[in-house]
Length: 332
Image (tube, rainbow, N blue to C red):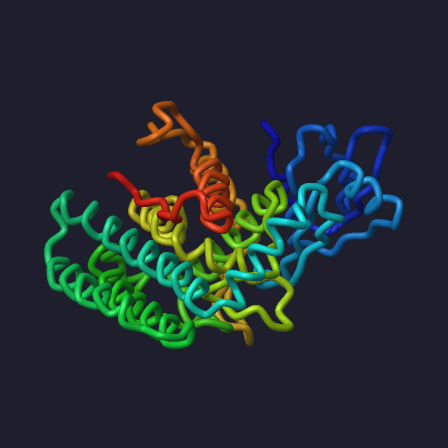
């Protein structure tokens, strides 16, 4: 199975025959055969040349860039090999037809809220009290999804649902070093917000890398408006998986003391993970993506990463009007 190559420090990337070589500032080299790499995620300052980008294009490898604080800033997205003209026309048709667009947008929001509920139910079953009111509020706001008549109104409903959901985080974590209070972005004002921002960034590029392997065009989203933003479909799909991929991992890292206050730094850009903290998060993130579960309909085990691709295939079928899209719902 192909994997992600993470580069946390600065250095040089180059090709040596069919191998990608990373050389850090101390001259240490790391070798990865190109056939084992699905995408590269870069957090340091790197030098590379055009021939290296041509090599990535030939091998269908995407490359994603993050700034010093761990914020996603852009991607090298090679020429699409799998795009289907017919499917792109259908994707555009669903975007331009307000009824079809709203149908898909509602499915993304309902899927996100359902998985928020699944996370809270998971911790309620494990003896954490005071989650029943939050669950009931999410049930009520989910009823409002069908009544919205614009993507902007749906985004507002989804935002309200997340605020309700986030209100339970301090109950689940119960750690003064990771007090949450409320969601803050760019910059995150505390450690828990920094973890959410970092995890969401990793999820956005993971979904984007999976879209690259399908016939879908990442520039045409449905919940998030398609405009001058480079990509939007990955943002739509990520909403569904944030609770079960990102939030569950964050709770696990904190409750098992795998991440501590010393793994964070602060500055003018707010609070952010140190390089050591990012390394810890990424190691567990990759373990989570490789974790396999019994799929309810395929009757075989699939990885968490594969769940994303399977949802993308379901979106393709929806666009082709073969079968209505049903977002993945966690079963635990």
